[in-house]
Length: 231
Image 1 (spheres, rainbow, N blue to C red):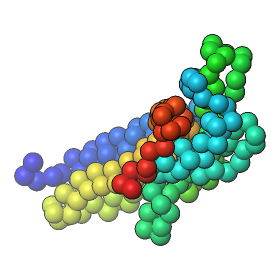
Image 2: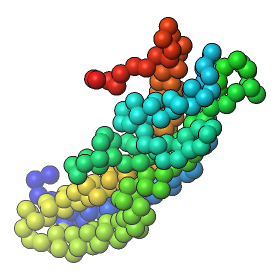
Image 3: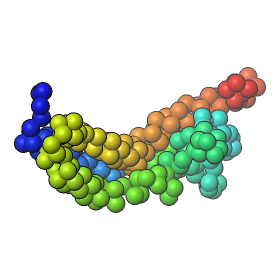
């Protein structure tokens, strides 16, 4: 394409804007899909030969051993409620973000093994602060995006194709720069997804159950109490 004609420049602008609007429509669908409520879940594990009272005493310790540690935010004589975070220790550079709340309880009797304490991890929903600020502003972003796309296309349509300088007409290809405002909504919608929060919480609840099984395992001197990693 040695000399980009005005009609060709207009075609490039129109195609670029059209593709950008299609991607925007896909971002709207993706955001709605990701924002659907997460299905409930609960996990159980039987701790054989473990006194329920002793097991309840280990709930907070098992939470503190998780990486990053679970924060104890409530509970009663039957169990505890933890808030899970997605980052490390809070800091200005990398603040931790709450992603879920998980309730952990100890019960006996009405389950498959009456001689064991049953440990239950129950998905208790998302924490109030688990959604990034950008995710809360995502609907506004998606509402403004088509206006930006159309506005940029109109300005380029009026200024570039009719210009007598070939170098200026070639600038019509800069319409592809719209990609820089099109990919963030996909990432933000995924990061703020309730389904993602529930999946992460379930994976970490499985690790918690394994930790509790180790802590509560009967040994020669009582329950095994491993040191904190690196300690």
